Image 1 (cartoon, rainbow, N blue to C red):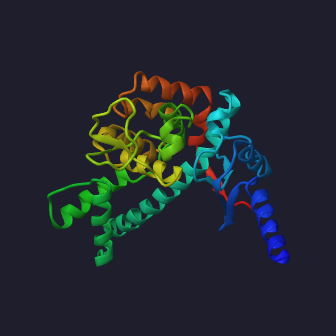
Image 2: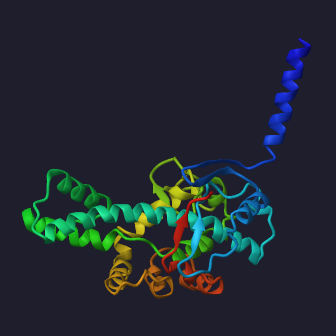
Length: 296
């Protein structure tokens, strides 16, 4: 019995000490943080020399937070807190962009076959149709004309997003990650779901037909917003502007593309908020060919 009690106490002590450390896992060259305090996140950033984010061709460690720090709302509002918010989101945005780039590579490969008169196989055509549904590229044409139109539309829609806009938008929508949606639902962009009881109920509208979508992680929220920008009609001009930049080997530049977010949200002066955040915090440099690097 005494031996059992001793073992139990050791387990309790171990559990207590473990709770004082961030819950995280290191695998495949990345650190996945399940939960942590702000101080623990900042310490982790210092350990991996992630102090600066305003670098052209910057290289940033693969540190992925699942959610905002536990004590985030209690941290005083200041520029240092905002810089931490930016560094929390930047690797996640770049990770989402990597996934988008992988999808684009599939379409580019199929397009190269097409323009070189190499017959497309069954899997090529299947990929085209699946991506067309996902990215809302539609045509009623058939055969070779359909293939050409799908390829053109997909190469316009499937592309990376400017980290500057993704981060500045999240800051504006969530008051730098302190909003109820960010803390309780990992929601960074006010995404709604309609005619369902699933999700967070709006506090100021008892009879609302919509709820705010709950995401399993910050990354999932970013990926959902990226898909919206890459497929919704409201962002047609943004995608065209991005394509023109790619045609001259220029990365998507947030300061030039912000204007196309006029219909992104009905918040007052949303463009002004995004533009001010982008400029004041020097986020434009994050658009210039940033790269994720493995952690040692």
